[in-house]
Image 1: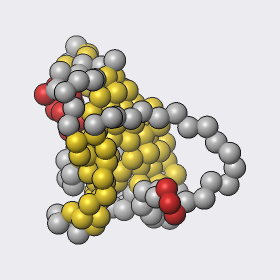
Image 2: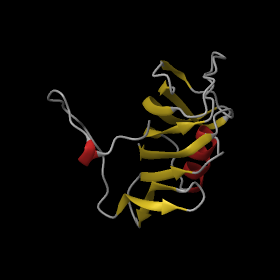
Image 3: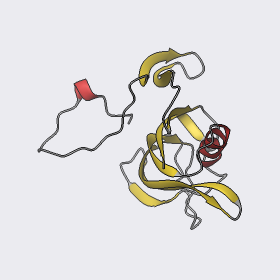
Image 4: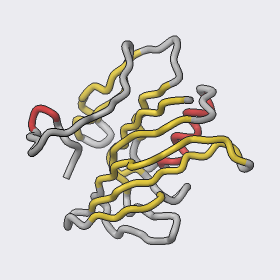
Length: 156
């Protein structure tokens, strides 16, 4: 389990990848005293642009953290990309993955203004320690980060 490390990975067949980047910010791998792991952490400055690199710490709800950060930075809509871990993920349809050591990949996610306010919708793939893969929309307010969650939020 764990995030894919580019220098330790081999791709079995050619693929096409689209990405977003920043000229002034990056994710850097640094030791984290809270988790006792070396983790990717957002570093750098930005005076312009409409994107955010975000690391969510343990026990914070993923959707709430995204919404709070975007609200503080004036981002009202956008696309969300990310990977991380959640303690016993819960989907909107009520399914719960009974595993503390999951890995999550955001498949399709958006941030938008709704009648209830700013909302992040997160469709994700979840893999548990037995290799079982689950798909669905993560429930707001019921998905605390396990070790870390790294995200790129691209504002519209």
